[in-house]
Amino acid sequence: MVRHIILWQLKDELSADEKRTVCENMKRELEALVGTVEGLCSLTVHIEGLPTSNADAMLESEFPDADALAGYAVHPAHVAAANTFVRPFVKTRLCLDF
Image 1 (cartoon, rainbow, N blue to C red):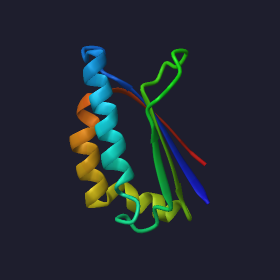
Image 2 (cartoon, rainbow, N blue to C red):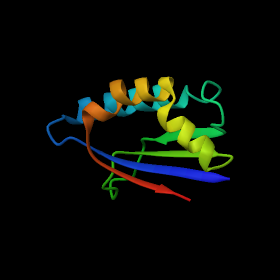
Image 3 (tube, rainbow, N blue to C red):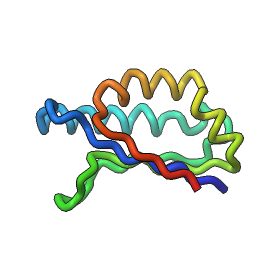
């Protein structure tokens, strides 16, 4: 099993309300990929961090192997969701795959 973890910090120029909307959209669109992207076993976007957090959102996903993760990275549904609902709003992205 391969786990794919992403932490995002959103752009500073976004208001608190805009950040909340962006996070809600990210959660809805990315979680909808389960059942659409072959090999994506589970995916949860966490957006209710404690005030001590320095990230705005976290993606936690599981794949059967590294090949499935590689397929997810280029899958058209994932690319469309990321290009529309994630990348335009992100200041910093950290990734850990294990």
